Length: 337
Ligand SMILES: [Zn+2]
Image: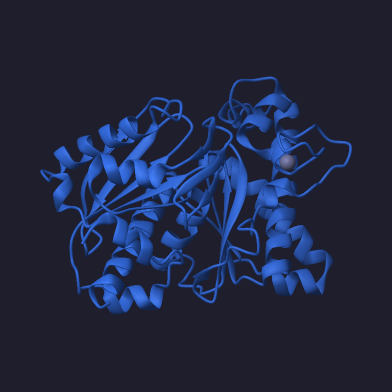
């Protein structure tokens, strides 16, 4: 069985019910690789979900010519930590911060990485000799959170990632919802202030242009959102106003996701959320204000509507692990053909 045949038969939608049926038919470790703007994180996980090895390369993944060797090097380091080789893996999943065409295995556009129409899946399969599945990082994380029963096992949930960019992965009735153009959940480019700053997408006043990590730092004239949250904790009035505004806008995003997709829960993660309590408090305060103002909002936004992930949740890497297991579904289809 070649990687090419796996590619042809690969299922591109995670179907957790199907995964449940197949689990155990073909046990074996998978690798989940989370590509970020400044690091590559790898988890090697066995069929029972135990972590066998890990590696984090804290460096830019590089231009697209260097992407495959950089990813393979991080994978090999994690495999060495697990005392495994590439051949021990049944599949590799990769989460990429950008637009991904899962059918072709291409990264269509990853602005923060500087990649355009990169055939990442085929390049990695040629380099490492194992089946590879690639997916947008936020959508991969949503699949992973759902499979792991986060948010009380909700079958309708959204994962809102607040980091370098802002986007949501939407799971409806247990399946990833992509939408007609594969852009479902791209709430970061919903306009919240028509007089706001110009966004990388060309519009003015997108949510992302106001409350992504880089946008928060820019609005405070500092290097990082962590500095803003630290200043707010220290009582700086300007920083306090800014983190309150971030909470208001993210509560708007959560309200909008719940109204448009009727999800049961919204899980919030991403680098900005790792500020913890100072991040969460203004968000919860605004949700409480919305509830108090409207019976409809009170019904849509119950107190347990939001789960903020702890920083150590590694939603991206676990999402990539979940995506790797969808290659395994493909292999089952081929073996029964
Ligand atoms: Zn935008």
